[in-house]
Image (cartoon, rainbow, N blue to C red):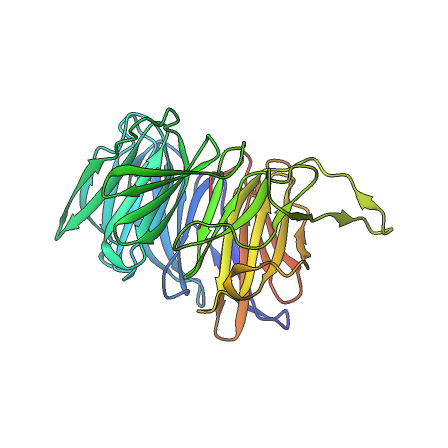
Length: 360
């Protein structure tokens, strides 16, 4: 049995809430509600359950049991009313929930292959996208029903999508395994923007910028996907033809730690309207790096390593909540850890066994 335990702390290190979940298996997916105070967690197992709970009080708000063999991805709508979950059964069933009522509104066959990511349109709570191995589908919610159109890839040979972001209500950016950014309009691939020779394993979009992670991190202007500023690399994998600077770490004796050339496996930002803020980066080297970001997505050249020491398997997901009087960040690898963002202190560790898939 695996149980997820989450504790909330304020910047002074005081425990605000403790939540002992009823999960019976590994946690595979985490999604943060738009109001920042509610989280949904999805587990593996033959009869998988999604739990929705309040970060402030630790109260379980809903238990949603439907999927077989686990939940691979989930997301709240922009309004927060709906929750979409993707299962790991043979049909990779997609389910739409009125989660506050613990009511399954409808379900539909997702794909014969695994769904890796799901993303709601941040400006339209009736649109979302699912993607994964060999397929991308564009969904529309109509009352208590939903329907999907399958994306067309044109002459693209790579059809494995690892990450998603919205540029506008009718434009979706997809991160495939061939190192491009795919731009879909409607359900058709319109443009392929070369970014890297490595798979695009993570993307996160602010109001003005798109941050792309592979074996380095690059920032692009969201409107036209032109590169902005320098790229960041971890080791010796700078993007071709683009200026970059290296992030490296030192041990307690001040000696530089050799890089294992990690993959960027998760990105999550907190940005103002101007594009300034910070970007949390999870790597396959089991580190989390906080990168300050200036206006228009320009990296400042400084970085900090506030969260270190995840077990082998990489930081496969990040989920942060900066609400009212406290700040916290949850990370997922082979352990579930809660971090105090202000101090960089790891405040709770829970071993999960096999590495879960994601946190959002």
